Length: 298
Length: 272
Image (cartoon, each protein chain N blue to C red):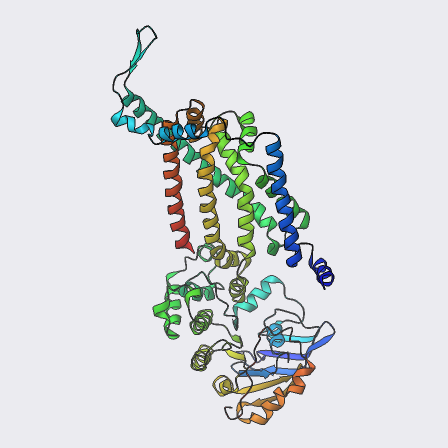
């Protein structure tokens, strides 16, 4: 009985049926055990010397974001050397005010990188999506080539693209825009191709049946069915890219990521907290906006 | 019009995968006639409509529709010229789902409106008012701005008929335009269809015999790809229809590759 069902399973493929699922679960358990076991053996599974104290200290600093100093900062903070001579004094309030202004500029850079990068990705992906969509039946070698380009673009992370591009075009937003564009081209291509594949053939027949020419069919049947899906995917990936571009500063592409690296390398958790609040506000508000537009288009 | 008939078939034979779908020695349909085609699933009704709309060429024989010879596949431009004069209503509710009822009706004018106006869907004012008149004629003017996928099945068929009015074709082919509708909506759609075809030749594939007197003056019965009878509607009685739909006949052709419908309305004696 068992044997018969096992044979049956083999006919359906190695992972189907109840036995196949059990096997999969076992393989998964073995993998988990291997990961945990090897890390423990190498002594890499520790939480550091005093995790609780560190956690409390970090959390305490995070709980006091640096922007509060704009109102509550010491207007005359004095730095003295060990023997008591005054080295310099600063007004914490104006210092933090300047930092906020810099933060605003960095946010704008991040938005510019994400917006232009997304547009670039969408434009690059459009012809490739047309080539890969199965129902448009582009010549086979062309389809494979386009699919290959999209797969490569999708599998290389934005940061990796960024690192390479910084080496080519230098530090700055251009590298970020190109990195975002090249990586999201892969995702755009896939979503666009799916939109084209789910095209309503009845609509095309309807327009064709009154004697419309190919251009008229495109603008009256294909375009109205595909455009809302294109716009919706565009907003979706744009949203992702806003998030992605906050990290691109890490590699010198400018924007919020630069401030994040700066704050972390100086252990200024208060400032990091301010930057992260801006990132969260940016992502959440763009999320809400794009969701609303996408719902209106559905 | 001309002395040429609207449709002329001569020794037409259509075969696919070694099976004869349609075999018609001679069939002539004159301008302005109202024709209903009846027959069991796979009898060749849809094949006949596809031949007439230039969708597929016959294996043998001559077909003339509105002066175009369809014996060979038509080149694109000629096919489009034929389709401008040929209105089609399909059971599959062929509308552009994402466009409004009014824009769907305006699609009927694409044979006349060309260039950038037809690409941007910025139609000239007189076409727009004509489209609204067409919607008024089918009683859907209040729904003009509603998107086609928000309309009911009956309303969609009415939009398709308003598109016919807009197109003003000389020949109308309707493939079971009432298949998805309830009886009262079906009768209404049939009446509108006949009204829309006032200036044209109307050929309808019908399953419900109750609708025959509404739609046709002449009834062509198809059985296993051949014409079983070709009679005025008054001469078609229950016995003739039952003969046509007799199960043994249908079972010889169990696969209806050219018919995509899943249910068949059986004729109910007494309604015809």
